[in-house]
Amino acid sequence: MALSSTMADSDESDTEDSDILINFNPKIGYFFADNFALGIGIEYTYSKDQVGDAESIGTDLLAGPYSRYYIPLTENSAFFGELSVVFGTQSVEEQEVEVSTTLVGVGIGPGITIFANDKFALEGVVRYNYISGNTDPGEGAEEVTVSINEFDFLLGIQFYL
Image (cartoon, rainbow, N blue to C red; front, side, top):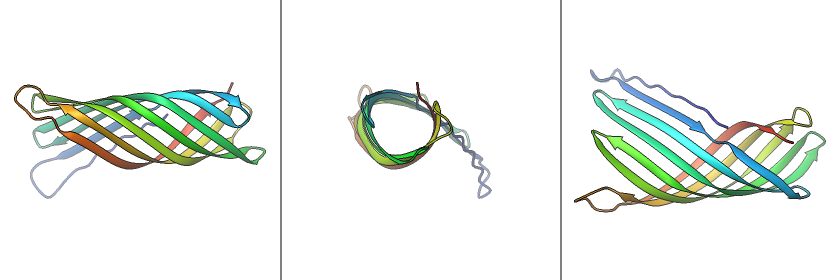
């Protein structure tokens, strides 16, 4: 699970800039073999950007399967590789115009798990994501193709049953 928020102010003009980003990313998985897990994840992101009187609000809802392979390092830690595929939608509302985008993506990256005890662990993941999609701009507008390349650094707490 990730949660972040940012605020920015600008002194260069008479306008005030403000950005907020909140991300929630729960996952559930099952170990099908030694050190190999499969599961499903959901990612919800809310963003709000404001520059002066102009405001943009966006939401993303993505879901899909993931797999992980763990390589034990010590008794209390393990390195893992993760591969995920996501499907979902993005909605952005700006100046009373709403644009929806259907998204498909893939993510891959390494991570490390450090166990506090048998049930709880702290995790860090560095992940590359490629996401693409097509917008549905509404009547009278052209469809636009969107491509997103991003790197994420994620910290989280995992609970193991």
